[in-house]
Image 1 (cartoon, rainbow, N blue to C red):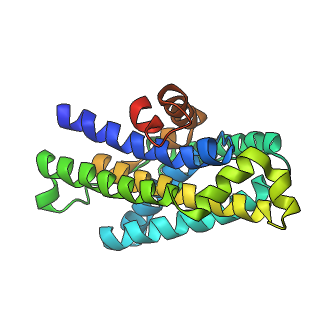
Image 2 (spheres, rainbow, N blue to C red):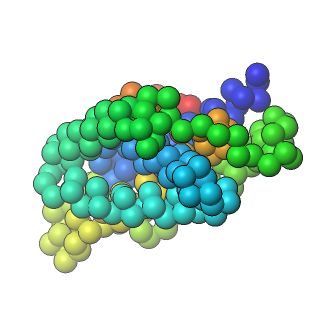
Amino acid sequence: ARSMLITAMAINILFGMSFSLLFAYTGMTSMGHAVYYGMGSYFMMICIIKLGIHPVASALISLAATSLLAVFLGTVCLKNGMLAFSFISMGIANTMTALFNKWSFVGTDVGLQMNFLPEWLMDYRVKYYVIVGTVAIVGTIFYLFTKSPFVMIAKGIRENEERLKFLGLNTKSQRLKIFVVSAFFASIAGVLYCVRSTGAYPAQLTNESSILAIMMCMVGGTETFWGPILGG
């Protein structure tokens, strides 16, 4: 029971980190960030159950598909200002939650479930080390990414977007890139949730899940990499 709790916390922390890239580093408040967390799980389960693809390949396809979805939805959300961005992202999350609760292809309100794990990964201790170890590795990569010039520009957009526009930077394009990277990290959390729970569920897509990420950043602190970790 303790290992299940710790793996859930680890996945939530990774999800919170992905949101902090938008919220803390770029000043973007997505009220529908859980869409990419949930779709990380759903794309993986669709590949496994509907298409019969190997779980490892399904996980990689899921990350790519969620990133492409983020490019499309991010383009839609970022057409107007940041207030509109928040409300449009929330509307997309509400629409997808309602759709997935009714759509038989994705299992309606019970989601998609199947025990696809190999025998060695069914041991809860092995699963614990795989999930926590993966979160630690991805978290380290995320930390190094936050020190990159790319994220420094994101901070500049948060602090003074008009100045960067004056210098010739396409800030909308930069926001979209950050949005997609953030969705990619969220989808990794979704894939890990899928491994932990051997399923994908509509509850992952809800605004409540997005609010959880917001609360993690707010409680832990928005000015530091450690915010989502402390908040989780």
